[in-house]
Amino acid sequence: MQTALRTSLPEAELASRANFAPHARVVREERQGERQAQIGGLPLSIRGLRKSFGENEVLRGIDLHIPAGQFVAIVGKSGCGKSTLLRLIAGLEKIDAGSISFGQETQPEDIRVMFQEPRLLPWARVLSNVEVGLGRDRASNDVHARAEKALTEVGLTDKRDQWPSVLSGGQKQRVALARALVSRPRVLAFDEPLGALDALTRISMQRLLERVWRDQGFTAILVTHDVAEAVALADRVLVIDEGRIAHDVTVNATRPRERGSAELASLEGSILSNLLSAEDRT
Ligand SMILES: Nc1ncnc2c1ncn2[C@@H]1O[C@H](COP(=O)(O)OP(=O)(O)OP(=O)(O)O)[C@@H](O)[C@H]1O
Image (cartoon, rainbow, N blue to C red; front, side, top):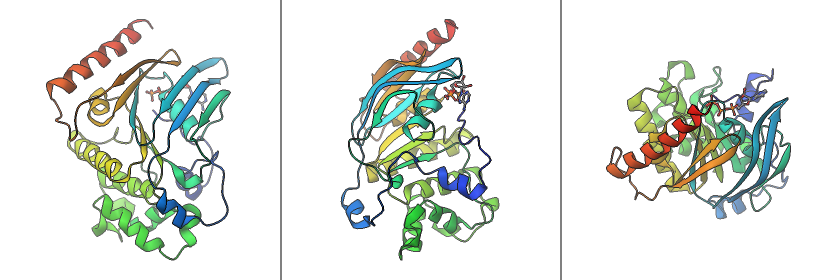
């Protein structure tokens, strides 16, 4: 389970930070035109990454290169450090040792996170909730148009004037996705975003995630407990065990993928047996 933002920040700040990476350096000048021209994923290089909480050594040396635009899933037994790794990548947690780099200077809008809980502002209508994701670009003239476009991308234009409280769980997550997408991030980190949804809604959200990833080309990093979801969506599945990447599995299946195909089922089976053998050692 993700453990984000264990702070007493006001709710608006929480919702805003849910989509921002504090370690990303803020470049003050408006570079919207430049951003539009450079949309696409950023590569990610992690070297010797370590993180402990007190005596609990959670990550013990992660080395990883993710090419720009790749879709990577992270799986592993409960408590192995999946969310910690994601939070370090997103700059929501401090690194103890090692480095994470994106190949260039980043802006806060470049790296966004979507969590299991939608974290919508209850007092703001759907469109305003999406606008929160624009961060400092909220002062620009085309705020409404950009938020509406993001809502269209997730198929929710008809809900723009609704309050979050009247939405279903799946609709709330789609608003959260629109809020994450509205700034056209170059890295999008998902921490169990579909974990609380029913099976059918989950599958339709998986299709939506895959579609927006293909349309926008951001680098996607998905933490999930669901190995079937990992092999259905990702180009590559990383298994974390004992603080390191124990397996790095390439998923070559062509897209769109046929869920339940023999190829995916066989990959899922072998990843699950890796996970179970890790579980047996504890
Ligand atoms: N802020 C924190 N303070 C102290 N310990 C933490 C903190 N965040 C995570 N931990 C500990 O770090 C370990 C890894 O937690 P993390 O949430 O990354 O695991 P996970 O693999 O995502 O787990 P799950 O699959 O159950 O969600 C756990 O032992 C957890 O208790």
